[in-house]
Amino acid sequence: MSVDTATVKRVARLARIAVTDAEAEKMKGELNAILGFVEQLDQVDVSGIEPMTSAVETTMRKRVDEVTDGDRADDIVANAPMSEDNFFMVPKVVE
Image (cartoon, rainbow, N blue to C red):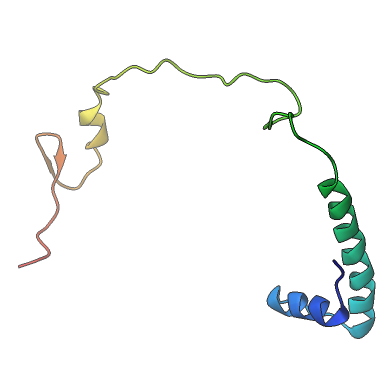
């Protein structure tokens, strides 16, 4: 796959990047080099290789999953303009 100057200009316009003809020619070469490298990667046999999320083996740190009631209802509604029985009260907006 190769990229022509018109494609480079179209992509630049979509990205809202102003490019001159000289810059488009330079980018054409750079993009073709990148696509050539990607085509090389496509030829590598990766069957039997397990996908990974990191280059280093890590284990996920997890906290204890326990249900709590919070016990902080008074603190939560303390700054509310209006509250009743630990619930926020708001003015009626729909008749």
